[in-house]
Length: 277
Length: 313
Image 1 (tube, chains in turn orange, purple):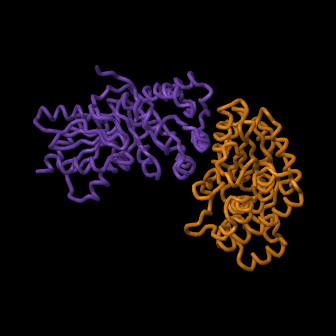
Image 2 (image 1 turned 30 degrees about the vertical axis):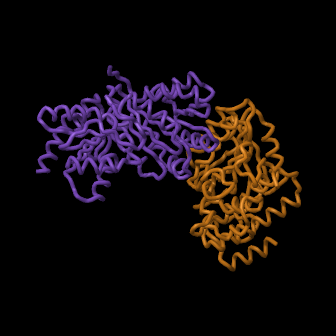
Image 3 (image 1 turned 120 degrees about the vertical axis):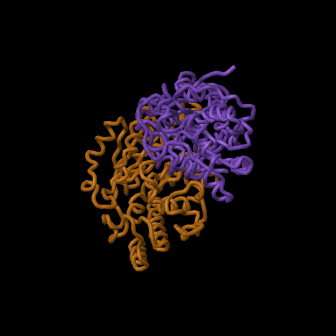
């Protein structure tokens, strides 16, 4: 089964629920990990992997595939579930998350997990790597052979290296590069506006020379529309600032900074799964 | 005939030469291409050269992205910035994923000279050698730097290539230059000096002096610090009974430490001295003045050998 598929709203909605359930179960089993930020980026990943990106789980090294980098590597459970659900590895691997000898490390490891394009975890580094990939796509011919997507957290934007990468992507006109910001407004120690204010975020990206799009990061139609617009841009890199809710889908986790770096208890897993039915 | 060329210059010229036959070779710099000599490649192959500006962390990330896309990127800037400033990027985006990035950094060591301590990288060998997957190479002269550049390109995996600013005299070498294989330049029997980079020539001069005193000194060019040629170290200790290391680097964590680790684990202690910068920062000055001030030139090496020989008796 190769992607992209024709976007079917009901199918995507169903996948998003399945993946949120996977995340809650994986983290509950692991007993540690990052729940809030994994749940907030699910819809972005679903749109990318089930609809937008050219990729073939049966042939992960296909040279023409689109690339994805999870720069906010702590959301690994979301990526792992999506990779398993698209067929990169068997579903039964998901329950091994964070265990000794698992192919699913606490943060993404490209040498252990099929489909992971780059090892990440130390925040701020993914977009630079994405720039290198994007430029490599265009080295052989005038037209870039593939597109490159990088998903960043909003707290991650505190890292200076992100802005070095932002500057360089615009300078080299990497129009086959699309950054997505999972803008859930919360970082470990609290609200982004209190810990390190990002506003005015769209203006910042625009001032750096990027094509800036904003979307509701849980509205599949809106995300797909933004991704389609990004594909049409031929001069500049695109950023999709996706407004999201940390812990999206589970009422008692939503908008709670405290759910950044903890896993649910068995009881909490059960009530979360009940809600996600 | 002996020539004189900076290792950075030999590197830059070889990059430009390799560019002709190696289409996957890509070169990156962080606004120092005139100094690192990547500008020679840049002029010849502008479509495969990327200047990311004064942004070393981003430089390493770009290189990692190109490497995982099948290119062979050489990322260049000053050693102090490539290693210390971008250390987390080198660790997490290059060493840990084990991607094929070549970090070729110039202006290493005290011989940067007048720019002073902020620009004198005396920790880079230690920083790069402690990371899994990295190969660390320190050529001693221009021809070696050119050879090393070619070998580093051909090697698969992350490499740190340490280059210097000043022009250095060519070193006569009758043994081949192979990564990971120490070059025995003098087959002495009384003591061994294991050196890298600019200190190889100083060691040869010291060996000449000592030879006039009737002391036979083995001189080893340990151009590959990692993986270290352990057999050459142990053989030198066994056959000559005294070992002195010399490097343009802090004595903590560099070549001297690497040799000490091998000798200590093997047991059978021999008199041993590490010459290098002794746990302090440098300062402005001419390279020769700094070598004298910080105790790393032929005179100091000869003195260390004499002291070690006294310890043997």
